[in-house]
Length: 280
Image 1 (spheres, rainbow, N blue to C red):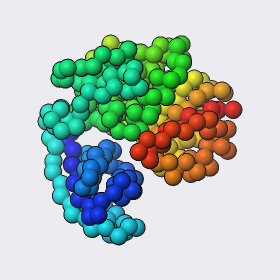
Image 2 (tube, rainbow, N blue to C red):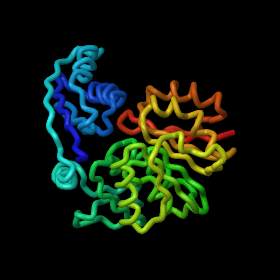
Image 3 (cartoon, helix red, strand yellow):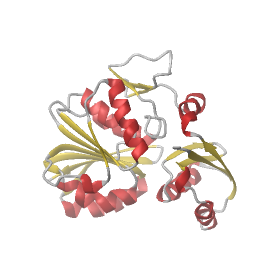
Image 4 (tube, rainbow, N blue to C red):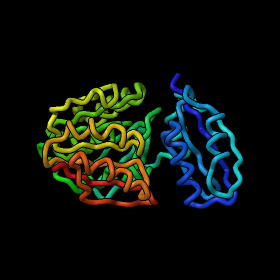
């Protein structure tokens, strides 16, 4: 059963800085989606990876003077679509050009690119700032005839849009098996042919010669795997990175520059960051 845990943390006093910092710590602990609000944060993690002792350690060492109240509930795998339809996943338009919705949505706005995503237990619906920023980069880039790699593809949403935008070949790689299966399903829903690989960065081919490389994961994974990523990107190729905060840019830059990756642009949304880098 692909169950998830919803961890609810109420924060007093609560601010955007507090929820963003807490989300960053939880992300490093394996949580893969977050819903901040005026009173705190809801965070999601596969039930098999949930450890309340880890949460308690994060809260005990939290560097801001705030009070926490925690609770957690199980979201059953078969109830995932219903949960998102009721509470979180609503149709969204990105950049005025791309609408993202589920097969169960009605009253869908019209847009040039129409993407169907049934998220199930995989995250990446366009609602989080990092996904929205990555989609924006794809919409603003010439994908015609390109070879694209989407690392940590999740629901497959970035890979699907790249194919819709004219990419010749798109390869999506996802370490989480249920998410990988969901990405394959979403590609079929949209009628787009994407090669989906179940695995991590070790599945990359050093001589792939990608024109574009996407990675919307988190700072620690990106910095650890960037030397492998760059080998799959051709000279002059473009890399889009997200999943980290504006304050993390110096950390990314310190790893990227010795590998021949130059930061050409940065975009910020709600303190989350996406970078466009070019390989020398």
